[in-house]
Amino acid sequence: MKLTILILLFSTISGFSQEIKYNLFLKDSCSNKIENSLIYHLEKNGIKYEISDFDGTIILPSKGEYKLFATELDEEHNIIIDNLTNSDTLALPKINELLLIDTRSYKIVSIEGLGEINPAKIDNYKFTICKDYCNGIETDYYSNGKIRLNAEFKNGLVIGELKRYYQSGNIKEISIYDKDGVLTKRTLFEENGSIKKE
Image 1 (cartoon, rainbow, N blue to C red):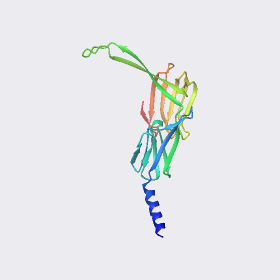
Image 2: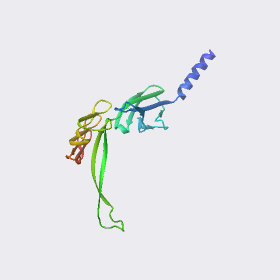
Image 3: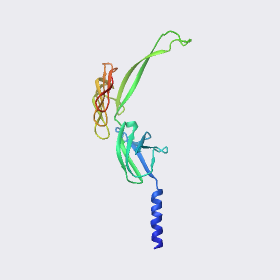
Image 4: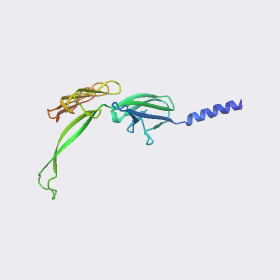
């Protein structure tokens, strides 16, 4: 009888003292390589839980439902933590955007002897898919299967219209590019569909 009580007491105490761990992994859609995410956090009841060490682990106080904020993917997910060790794997976007800046120096009036310091910049966006430039009509998806981005490309440049979407499927951005791939107009939308910025 005393032995049974001791075993129950020990298992109860050790159950409370065990850490609950969570890790987010990211899968490269092109190479299938999986690595730890280091830019994410969880929230529950208004409390934010962040990575506690360099391997990407978050230590949690209890099991239950949490909100996952995968910052580098711009995704949010409701997750259930029901084990001592928990993890999820999300797919990285296939289409990546690079901003190329062409700087040209123009002579301006000297301010305290600084001379020619006013570079004008021309933003030019290039898009890659699996390390090659995007060509043709390409679509990228969120982990939940909804469209993230859709556009037509030529040698990595957008030809005409590019559309980005929220994870919910609502339109997030419509951008227009000229024949040289230079952004000429961008309209941003709130998730409810109202125009945020033009």
